[in-house]
Image (cartoon, rainbow, N blue to C red; front, side, top):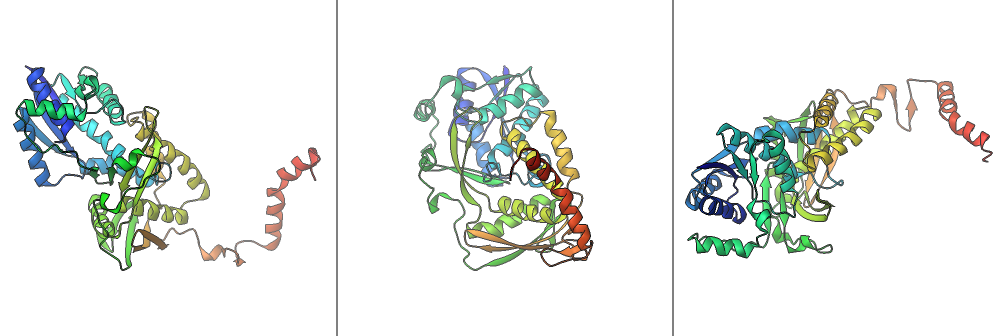
Length: 395
């Protein structure tokens, strides 16, 4: 029998794929899901039960939260990456690692085929296919939903006709949870003018009194929250639990999809947004202006390349090397105050703070140079402008 690995989430599309590919096409279906921070053990058990009931021969859940952080999230923090200055690349970042883990699993069990439930109108089809065909060109990619152009109702009717009776009612909002944020899609995000209602977000506002949080970074990584040292993943989860009840980190991202159309997606990412902004503030104090300038455009390119599914491009490893090297002195505490729907960065404390009073205080007094030094510097700095205006006769 033809062995096939199916990227399985337990949702309608991948459940259709499991049934269709096993019964109609005669594949031996091995379902696999990749946990990048969005599944509880109870949910994993439920997904396994569903996969086996529908027709998968085996089911496997691969825990990839730590690899997700180490291979992707860490670099997004180093680069302060926010797509279009808004979105922390929650879902797109996850899909990259999920695709890598799925194809590696397919190779490990000698599968000849790999399948996913993406449609032909989104970004995920590009991310999955590009990584699958790059890492395992010998494995054929099967995509029933895309190839058959199926409607949701057609999938439901097919499953019912084959004895699969489950609650497939379309939820009002599509929610995708992970370590680096939660995406929220609904009828409102299909328009250009409607916002998401309060009820659409998984975390409801429960905290109304301001709360102070201290974030400790060591060489760019979050190593402690409120003085309690732990691993980076645990610290992200801890901060999320503290900040999410304030309704912080909500927004709607508007951007260009890989296939060329515009799209909107709501998201809730309290911890990611706070971490990125706090890390950026610490960098402002500990990096030189030229480090900051070069980091900005490289990180923007890194985020775009990741979003476009180009994670395996060697240029990504080059940029990661630069980003990691830039973090040597990005260590210290950042003080944050949380409020309902917002947060404020109060300041930082670092042994590497370049805002050092021994060299002078901005707008106050200079200690590292004389008045004549300043006059000479200004004269030389303005020399090119003087030459240009003199040559071109500008007053």
